[in-house]
Image 1 (cartoon, rainbow, N blue to C red):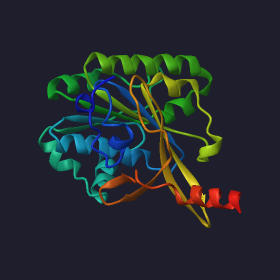
Image 2: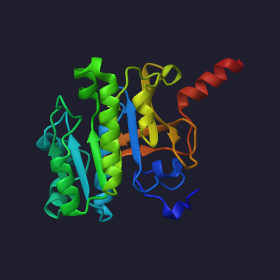
Image 3: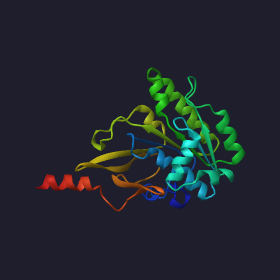
Image 4: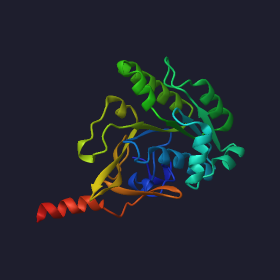
Length: 242
């Protein structure tokens, strides 16, 4: 088991606590969840926080344009443009390709030229939806991409949409477990509204906390409240006792 000082810090408030220090270097992490649970925001933070620590990052986007991604990050208080000028952040617009989940030529060139340490792939969803009949080939392509990232020494953070947001009804696809780590973002009913929550499903080769934690989204991105229990879960426990 790695010592916490040897782990790769995500820089995301509260997440490194759940991971007991961070991720294994050169590992791969999939963050999956329903729309609106904060997947892209976490991905933006992962790249931004790394850049602020001097670690160059590459953001591969298949759904947003580079300009809209920059604008979204800026609205959250994370200025990509300034860090792009310092070669600490690069953005690649990657359309879904029929033969490959992502073309590796441009990403690998950027990784080598700029000594990139963090890569985001946001997201796998379009590829999965566009070719639902090719699930075996999709898994093979995901493995190829993960392997390529490991070979060049980067830590990979990928996102994927999940059909359900209910924490008690989560179902996992085979490709979810191709990654070293799997994080689930969900929504839990809280009266007339919902509460966003996060849980670490697995991280290969390292210990981590397994509880469900509430998250909040504001300027600066996602904050994981590791010292709190989701209010809705407290309500459920009280109702069972009464």
